[in-house]
Amino acid sequence: MIKSLRGMNDILSEDYERFTHFINTATNIAQKYGYHFIETPLLEETALFKRSVGESSDIVGKEMYQFIDKGDNDVCLRPEGTAGVVRAFIQKKLDKAGGIHRFFYHGPMFRYERPQKGRLREFHQFGVESFGVDSVYEDATMIMMVSDILKALGIGYRLQLNSLGDNNCMPQYREKLVEFVKGCGDDICEDCIRRLDTNPIRVLDCKNESCQALYKDAPKLINCLCKNCEDDFSSLKKILEDNNIDYEIDTNLVRGLDYYSKTAFEFVSDNIGSQSAIAGGGRYDRLVEFLDGRPTPAVGFAMGIERLMELIVMPEVSREGYYIGAMDEEAVSLVVKLAHKKRKTDRVIIDYKAKNFKNHIKSADKENVKYFCIIGSNEIQSATMTVKNLEDKTQRTMDLKDF
Image (cartoon, rainbow, N blue to C red; front, top):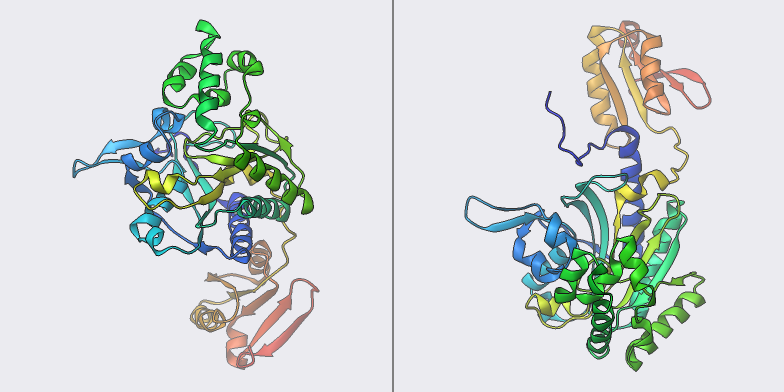
């Protein structure tokens, strides 16, 4: 028997209901904020992610599904959503058009990592990207949108904030951090040694507990911000406080990707074990330029859907729609005809097999419909049908023309 690949799961039954409830909820909220849907390809040039996500990231270094296709192109399955949206933004010349452009997306991403609870090799993300707004109010609005989505899904969270500075303050901080980490000698892990040459700030994101213990007294970027970054961060905190969004400062929060600057944020849950991040994002004002576009301020976030599945509080589902069943073979074609017409206005479930009343009503109850309708030879002769309301249990006979 052929089985699904490790870390690549099917979405069926109750999981499907939770999955679609998340997508519908997040989509509705993003649209209320004025965002429009964008779909980018699953397959992109590998260079896109090397230049955007960064060589220092675990994603590029260890986790990409990368291969040479039949046209000798170096390609990979997308490991995250932002880079593809930025590529589309530049390719469609929206960076040159100016103005404000706001997008949301959802779909599968692929990373070759060790599968664990809530973390798969094929997983799904919902993300939002905003281009052309150089204001900390847009950062705050992103955070408010995530908060609205999580609250609508009944998910509790803690919000963690940090500032990653900009080109004015990051270089000096980077020098201080490198000097400190090198002072730790040979006790740091191989990943941290590699990151010292590629993107030193990523050492703060190391998952090795012994490294984290060494970095406890490392210099904090938040204490080295230039006036502009410090003012922006103070404004962000004030906006969140004014809108009753609680937060905590995490000076080690750097995000897992190289393209972030200034605002960085994560929403975490205490209900899913050690892998506690359920959404995150921040500002990436230099990424469009990195990918050969015109310099454009940008900010965004992404949420891993599988990470949230067990936390979602599902709404109470009310009965909806119709079930139409045939008691005799001669009634099946009539059932199909009636269902085809009724589906123009309502959800309709039918069964092509002729069954008795009891078996049909079991099927109708399983489909959670409100109205159970049955037709047999007697009903064909009288041009009627039996209709039962499965909520209040009332039952009546009605003319087919009225149905």
